Image 1: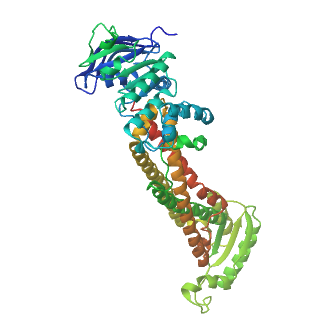
Image 2: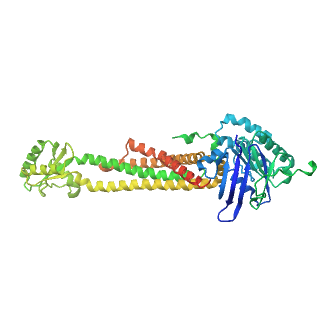
Image 3: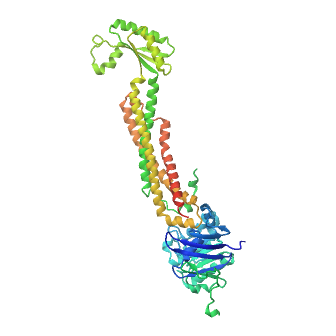
Length: 237
Length: 298
């Protein structure tokens, strides 16, 4: 078991010739932990998540992922690492011509899981997110909340070592938001490291053991990189 | 080799496949149609040259030019005897005067020519093999002792300009096939790039879920290969129909050289393989195009 699953050292990210979107990021994520990433819109949450799920390479600094240098890693090795990371995109990014079932099954098929081995887990996952009767529905026929649940199911179906979720509860009602967080918590209990970007401060109190990272203008609010537990809600004080 | 055909159905659905729905199969059909015609022309000319060259390169004609008919006849008979004794000569045929008159009849008419024009005696020779220039020179020298006005004309000399022209046409046909292959490749590149743009979001998602470049490129190369195969078969059928119609018309002409402009079984085999070659060309081009484009993203 690794002591640390992700480590950022002096990481900066710049798009084109503009100013740095992220600067001087130093932090460590540990296996089996639960993290909230907060910050105002434009603070750089999505950019930081892109670095985490290997959609971007940083402009500077070192990122160690699963004990290996993700910055200089050869491009051919990235797919193998990406399969160990589940991602819930802010805009869902479902494949429009595939059914809910096929969208959720996608990571397993990409990983080469045989068809007969994926039918049961995908069906169970559909049931779990409350879409058991919408297996054959295409994304265009699903509501925003249903699409988000498909996106979450797709991110967790492969039992990733890290789950990265960008505003995963943005389009669901409070009850479903709690259910989804419970799913994340259950995954976390099984050892998955969870990173949830959100600006919904009410969520922070729902996971008691979670830690918090707050971004301000592309930098961690605490420059030492030490993480804080989210404030406990007033009714628990 | 055919691994791309083994892509599971659910993976194929990542990129919608509409058979003959886009312009690509029809563009390929036109390219293959033209390639089939150009290749057929080239192959037919190759066969014609081969047949004519084989027939004529080992033949020669001896002309005995002598004004006195009796002397000419005597010299011709003696020359024929001399030639039969040579190891280089396989067959000797002294053409009778009637046959010579028939040869020039289209130009000079049907009246009795032998009395008015001193026609040369002609001896048709079939050699055991293609003779060298030195052997022709020896042949001439041997005949000069018997008939001072004897000329030896290799038959290949008559057909040489025609063969040269046909060879030029052959190269033009080959050039056309190459140009059409390049144009097909360019059409595939445009199609693959267009498909990449159309399905860019799907590709990005598959990529971020851990899909490899090979997995993604296989989907595209399979789709484009099937489009190319379908288009190619349509082009082949169209091209073959045109070749068949032309061959019927050529046969009806009944001219020796034109009759030999036909296609044998191996020529048809090459033509039938054009859609397959086109499919592989399209598949490889699509694969390289897609892999090149994917390398630009992380």
